[in-house]
Length: 126
Image 1 (cartoon, one colour):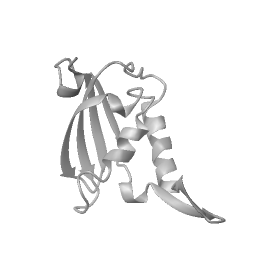
Image 2: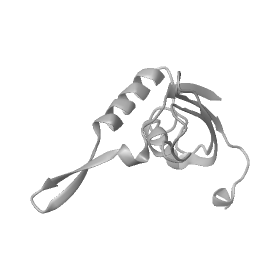
Image 3: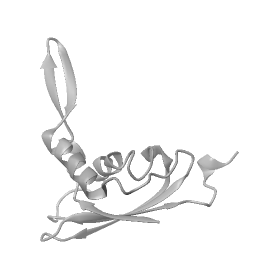
């Protein structure tokens, strides 16, 4: 089992911003999004070996938000994407996700537990 304590992620609403090039609207990662990815990379470091691409995973997230506002699902996208290549090869390996929300204005964070999921789930059946 892998256990990580990471900074609280930005909301899904602030992950991208749009720039206009001619007549095209191009989404780019926001500064907040890039800074969060850098913070996760620093917190995880190079010590962690990602679970291989064929390993189905069970993930538990304990979200401790800084304020009592926002949906429970808002920060999950950035968090899971930030762990691609670090805790797992790709977040598509996650077959079970359990999320618990709490509040901690003095130390907002996410506690992440990752373990192989040995039970057969519907999408894993032959």
